[in-house]
Image 1 (cartoon, helix red, strand yellow):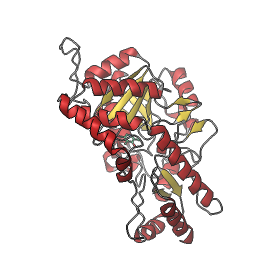
Image 2 (tube, helix red, strand yellow; image 1 turned 180 degrees about the vertical axis):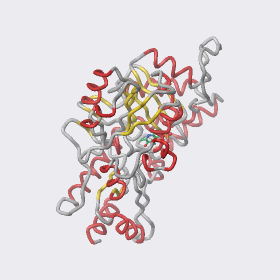
Image 3 (tube, protein in one colour; image 1 turned 90 degrees about the vertical axis):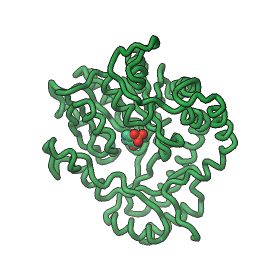
Length: 366
Ligand SMILES: *Cc1c(COP(=O)(O)O)cnc(C)c1O
């Protein structure tokens, strides 16, 4: 090895699509239409079509998408919103932004998504919405979550930031709840060349409110009809995303092949691998293994030139910033165990065969 194996490698991807990117970005530069505009509108149409929803509204990050989704659902101070403690900080932060209280449900030991057997236990009069996270790119148990939401008249907001293109019973994530939220952060499966996000929905009222709130709450006549934010998407990001969206399905297939190869090579080891159920298509934004001596393995791999990551070392209920909620160590044992044992390995369409073999050989050796 004469160079380290990166955790994410966007350079090769860029080289593959460079000429198309140049043209797309140059067209935006020539138009001098730098914010929202036709590029964003076109990408919204294409992304709605891709996710199988009526509307996609672009914003400046996945976090903003979650924030506006909660506002559109009317969630505010005094309300509870249920989510998992084992996710990226943004999922819970958005609940705080609207003044509501995050209520956590542990993840399932097999899928590492929301444990729907524990969901009803935490629903009360204050509960307004559920945010399932399609962790690592594997869809959550949406049938069960939607059934419980219907029973208690709750809204369902999918955090699909890691799962562009993932399928649940042949439907795309983002089309399964009331609202879907996506991130186009560069390292995500569909990544911009900067920050970006989108909201998807079939509900015209939500679509309308979200598209006004991302731009100061202004209507088409320029009147401020509600409070809003500067959450607009840059045209250059939309132009880049339009180029990349065409390749997303082939990139997902390549990721799935890499995941299948890892699975095969780890078959007779004591490594716990990610699972995929019959009813879903995992898009492997993250390929996370579970091992007993994670920190030791991690250190040795890094010494061998293999860059890894840990998603996530601290579950949200144990973060200092969530202490006020009153949770303690031991409340969500599956999340806490995964936080100690999870290790994310390099996975991307351009991960080379020799590099992947080198990673596996060293893990099995250690
Ligand atoms: C990346 C991510 C987000 C936030 O997206 P940003 O675009 O970084 O704001 C939210 N939820 C999950 C699960 C994520 O992985």
